[in-house]
Image (cartoon, rainbow, N blue to C red; front, side, top):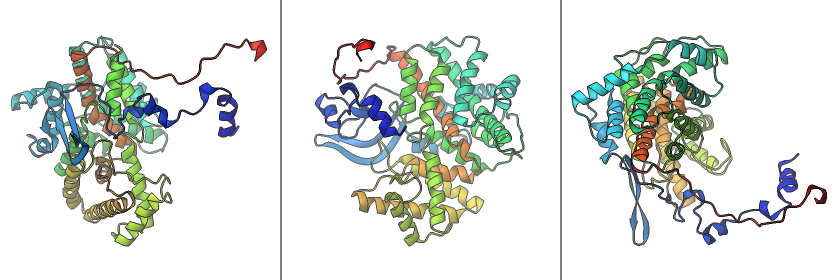
Length: 446
């Protein structure tokens, strides 16, 4: 049955199933999509963990401003510049987000030691849940693996603050390995490729371990590890209002176990409007490359490709140029600015400056085309360069979004704990019923 006929037959018989006009949202003062009329998000909580700044509030409304991201009040760009140990910046960010201040050397060393003690995954877990049960989609497999780890916890339903912290740190340490092993299992079973499983190295940072586990020869350069470490730092948190973090707090507010909250957040992050956007950028750029005959920064061809994207004639025909625009940032995404500079350094090392310049040129052209068509340019967001960075590091696309999960997990933990400390009520928003009340009709009279 055609979709239109189905809807007409089953949903067109009653006023209760007719369209809900947009004007009703304003009439009933309902914030559609938890958005105010000016596009800003409806505030649903208070937080000291992170702040995302993309506009200023004035008497005349919101005013665009350069983007800023703060972890515990500290500009993330300054944290990246000043990270103490070159490959342990993510661990330093984890400490900051969880405990609220920058660690001294001894504190960071102890925290890293604690994380490294948690790297190891039970052998039977890897064999029974990953190697013998490969998943077609790694995000779904991560959800499955997280829920299965519930069974390896001696006190899994304990949701007090300390236990949430312990469980969170343990999962932050383990999830990168789980993602790599799930990937190896998938390509072995579905792609008929060779299987290799490496053990974690207790001397490595999380970024170093990820590269070591992923690569057959386990080798990587300092710049490669530093780039991945920086990506993890930039993705660690993005305030309490992003969909996956909000999902975590909503689920946690019911009093359910920590593993269920993480599984829910992974499901949220899987969506292409959230964490899955980096894959959309990579796929889009494949199409642009074909349109422009490879990495040839011919501005005329790049402009034609950008116009085709906006005219719904290229890639997924949505009219979107992925990697641009953001729900909060109005002028710039600070994460994109940091990542662009890091990508250039690694591109020099790997002899990929031609590819990097191609991306930069397309970025410039796309911003110009969008400004001409929309009257304003949307800011380049972190997804535009994260896909390019992962490609340089040889990270397969199947792992793009799972790697996002691995980095964002600590933010979920921090907000989960904060909500337990300062709120504790179940999150229960309301909706306005706009259907009609009708009499019940007995079966014989219908």
